[in-house]
Length: 233
Image 1 (cartoon, rainbow, N blue to C red):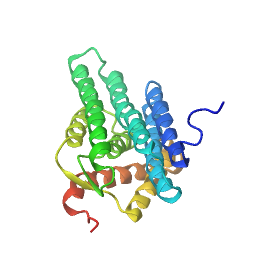
Image 2: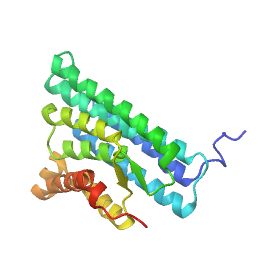
Image 3: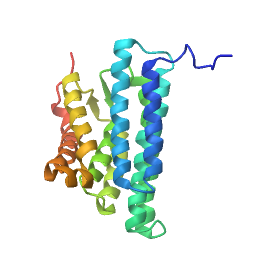
């Protein structure tokens, strides 16, 4: 007897599922090492980009859009929220007033991510632009922020509230073009390998610079993309 998924899932779906698995690993790792969790989070974002490339080249399946949204909930909703929560727990504790406020922001982030992904799947999945900040971008910003060394709750707590609000804001974000997505992916891969404390020990400030570069690119698109990024005709 064949498993039910045989013949129904494609290569792109397998990449999507690996994204979900990486999101789970990132969530678990937040309890041990938030910097390693940030690397796994950024790796999940690369997998999320690759499944689209594979689907365009090899073809997708009917289940693909649903798998993509489900995987993104794990990787770009729950995992980054736990990343912030664990950073807050280490610095402030979760039972303090400010700790509870920060965790409430993380819960709001998850709720906003789920809402946005549902709306995207229903209305925007075939368009070249979408309303609200992409969950992948929001998670990438949080991951890059941690790898760049900004792990204080004073930074992460307001940021998670801001990103939660922007995910639901009626602001139109155009999709990245292929060449720009490639540049972003290269910088992201370099940040995973060489960013943070590990990269600083291996290659000095150059390694740390990749995390800053990724954070700069992500924030530039976050704030300037809706107005200045060129759209497809």
